[in-house]
Image 1 (cartoon, one colour):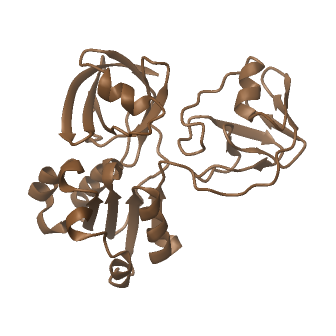
Image 2 (image 1 turned 90 degrees about the horizontal axis):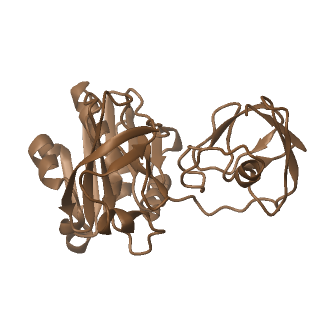
Image 3 (image 1 turned 135 degrees about the horizontal axis):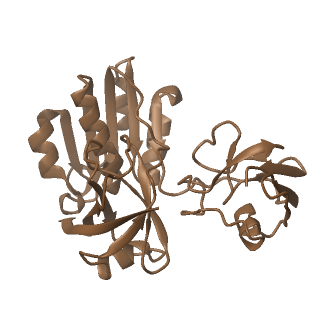
Amino acid sequence: MQLTILDRVDRVADGVLSLVLRGAGPLAPWEPGAHVDLALPNWLTRQYSLYGDPADRERYRIAVRHEPLSRGGSEYVHLFLRRGRTLEVSSPRNNFPLLAAREYLFLAGGIGITPILPMLRAATRAGATARLVYAGRSAATMPFTDDLRSSYGDRVSILAEDEQGRPDLAALAAGLSPRALVYCCGPAPMLAAAEAAFPAERLHIERFRPTARTFPPNTAFEVVCARSGQTVHVSPEESMLTALTHAGHPVPSGCREGVCGSCELTVLDGEPEHRDDIGAPANRMYACVSRARSPRLVVNL
């Protein structure tokens, strides 16, 4: 974790605050699509996409929407967090990387604009053809619209749903260039519509919440911590993350829902049962939700 100072707090739309976090020295580098874990003073850790310029090594910029059904993170940020506060921030992680292409279609819904902003900037700087379709409940709730219009002109379509309705993703898919990649971040209905409209091999999405899926009943298994030699029993009623923590092997964690990647572990032996929404790399797993297909896993702890 890195120590930062909350340098600025600005209201950028109804219910949305922009936070500028300034480091004491150069901050860890990042690329478009990356997010950080922000440790809040109320003991909660939450994940937020970086929306600034990766070339700025002095500041991280994030935006936080106040969610009425918040689990305590966004409510604390909006009601209690003040300029000048020291905050711990993780090094950036990127589960939503921007792949090289000659053309892009970016789709953003609401606060999902945050990871898309640096992607759009990087794509246009690289000389790619890029278009953004940005939707929100109303114009007042959509941050950064003025900057987008002034910087990108007619390459950006801004749709307030209470005035213009939702974007026609089927029409966008019908007119999509065969060499274009599609990047989408937003609420679950938008992601589902994008998955139905665009070819899976060209669509890249980031989720704020896990998809509803059904898994086999939980079974017990053992985790061998290779560095200490300790074997930890994981019962059907607890997560691997919880069992390791209780056994004295705490693993960094954030969302505890399989969407942020902060609890990634290296698997040295055994077969994990992946239940995350990220797509775990080879020989990796996320301890907050994933379990084991084999009776035993060996991990690099």
